[in-house]
Image 1 (spheres, rainbow, N blue to C red):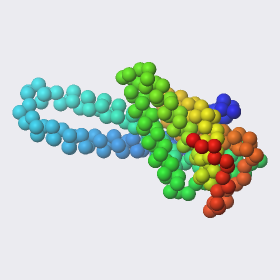
Image 2 (cartoon, helix red, strand yellow; image 1 turned 180 degrees about the vertical axis):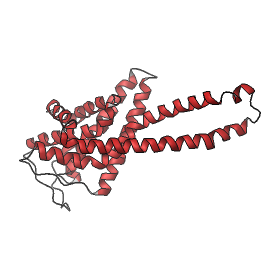
Image 3 (tube, rainbow, N blue to C red; image 1 turned 135 degrees about the vertical axis):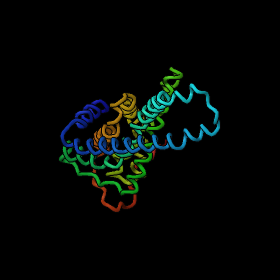
Image 4 (cartoon, one colour; image 1 turned 45 degrees about the vertical axis):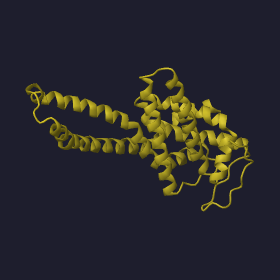
Length: 253
């Protein structure tokens, strides 16, 4: 179930119906990064350098002559900073298009099943912020891997496997189910969802490829939710506004 869903998600990411969302995410991410580059550069030149110069007014002559080298060093530092921000920014932006991605998967892959209901804007925005936090946390763990190998390697996949699996599966389920029911379903299949989250964490750990993590994860969890729902007796479309939750038997956390 997990492997077949992951295979379909990989095919989805490079398929023509996904290209619109892909180019939107990459284009907006590039615009935000360019804007940040100019903003941080201006802040460094106009605020940071004068601030530190105020503490050391009589700088040695060799420091005064090292201006070009300082600029190069600042540029390298800024490049590393923006490289760290690429994945979080793309996750935040992609979160706004996840319903489009889910709808494409449901329509193209499951034509005989009802199409889910897009999340309300505020709910979608909240999920985008949560996805941003998860990706930031994952990148911090990835950076820690360079410093203390072993324990942090396990922690990176354990934490991100749980968080990514939880949030993206619930996103796919919210399109068909009231929130309490979606959470209960996720708990019932907690092991499957966790291992699916590990697959997404592996995707997140690969530089450059991690730009596609939100799109891959959304497609992956839509496929997984479809398979889980088939075991539960099928899907019914959630009519907005949702009525009282028809709760599943809650097995507990």
